[in-house]
Structures are given as structure tokens and as C-alpha cells.
Picture 1 (cartoon, rainbow, N blue to C red):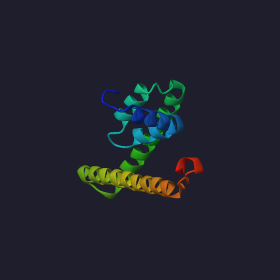
Picture 2: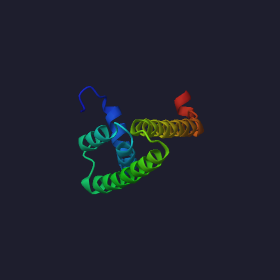
Picture 3: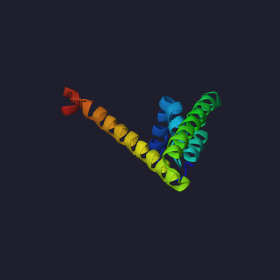
Picture 4: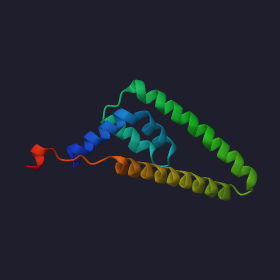
Length: 125
């Protein structure tokens, strides 16, 4: 996992897991193709089991409820299972894209709000 990765990047990911680990695990379990990379990263970074298991249980419960409701709603609207499945996939992608857009705007806003430090007299001399 760490081969070819810069130590600074690994430290940044480790810090993100330390601060937002349960959120990363829940989001990774809910997003398509996110389950395996998030769990591998959690294992590689030695994320504690006592935090991983509750987050994974929460994510599994949310996944079951969300996809059950999505199946009931889309199955009630469409007679074709293929069309209902396509609608479900599109809805998941739209929600994922919207969350990604909100996150990037939030990160951009946070970096824009961070004032740059003025050099001290010793540094400018």
C-alpha cells in the first residue's frame, strides 16, 4: 500500500482518518466502489477496531435502509426491473456527485478564508 506514496501524502491520509475516520468509513461503505478501498486504507493505517466496527455497522444499516427504500420506490414506479435498477444507479451517482461538489466547495471556502501569514521583521530582512 505504501510503495510509491510520498510520506507527506500518507501522513495527510492518516491525519484525515484520525479526525474523520468514522465519516470516511460510512461514506466509503455507501458509495459504489468505495467499500474495498476505504477498508484497505483503514487496515493499512491501523485504524482501531473499536472505531471501525461501529462505523461499519452504521454504514451497513444505512445502506440496507437506503437501498430497500430505493427498491420499493423505483419498483413501485416502474414495471421493468432493468429500468428501476438504472434509475437507482443514476440516483446514487447524482447524490455522490452532489456530495462531492459540496465537499469541494467547502474545502475551497475554507482555504479562501484562511488568511495568509504576514512575514515577521526577522523573516523579511
